[in-house]
Length: 299
Ligand SMILES: Cc1cc2nc3c(=O)[nH]c(=O)nc-3n(C[C@H](O)[C@H](O)[C@H](O)COP(=O)(O)OP(=O)(O)OC[C@H]3O[C@@H](n4cnc5c(N)ncnc54)[C@H](O)[C@@H]3O)c2cc1C
Image (cartoon, rainbow, N blue to C red; front, side, top):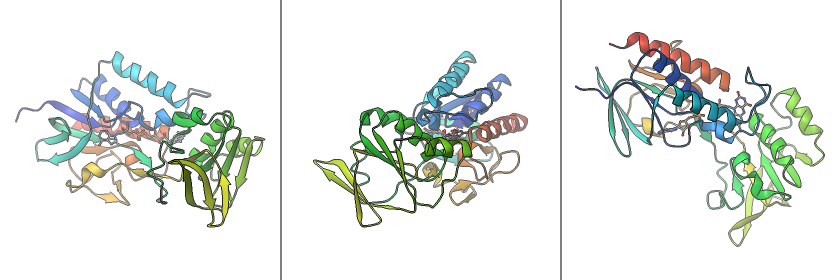
């Protein structure tokens, strides 16, 4: 069997790009595939204050330095929406909507995507008032009143970003406290145009002329808003793994300390794996470990 690559990496977020850098610098014939913009979740983060080496950097700026580093190393990068991974003893086949690629090893680095709330009208109002990315859509709501939904890190950083653009940000927190760094919570509490509503659930989206105009919380209180930004969690992007008998736990890929999955020569790294900390630093670490171990096992 003539193989196209030694290793195919699925997903060009920070984990996949790190793995690609390590493999390319070890002279491995590697291909990096992504169905979206390189950088993955980085493209939707307004401000990162906890990544070593940068006191503060925007997600898109970090993504573009990673992309530049990839290009300087001549890492082969292609657009590809992967729909299947097939396991054979000596080779794997990665299928995208446009091609079949034969490779010795695979690294899965497909990260996570925003979880939907599952409320009526949510899908039809996306880009018509509902968004999962403040950095992408925040400017559409300049000087308007918006709400964020969520209690964790993403909701905190993105509410702060929106507060600098919008007239008012109403944070709907389903819990009685925020879960996040103290520093961020203090900044939120000190922003005069952020109002917090604790212990509350959004139960309805209302629209006028197919555009969101208000939300209802706890089935009773109506609040008029032009936009809603949903940060209620993320779920692993694994829909292309349906036919592969790979071990998952709560939809996350189970790996060992070498980032190897339950299948030989298939590794995984970053937010797609089952672990305790989902951050940029851990994604980078996973990517490096996966790459070093892929290299060790290539024939
Ligand atoms: C709002 C927000 C704020 C955050 N703030 C911070 C922070 O301040 N500090 C911090 O350390 N972390 C932060 N994080 C977490 C951090 O962004 C993630 O841990 C990290 O980006 C995960 O990287 P990854 O490479 O594993 O996955 P991702 O960035 O999710 O990349 C996965 C890539 O895989 C691609 N892909 C998926 N499926 C397929 C397919 N079938 N075919 C081809 N390509 C596919 C996607 O298009 C994507 O580009 C934040 C996250 C969010 C959402």
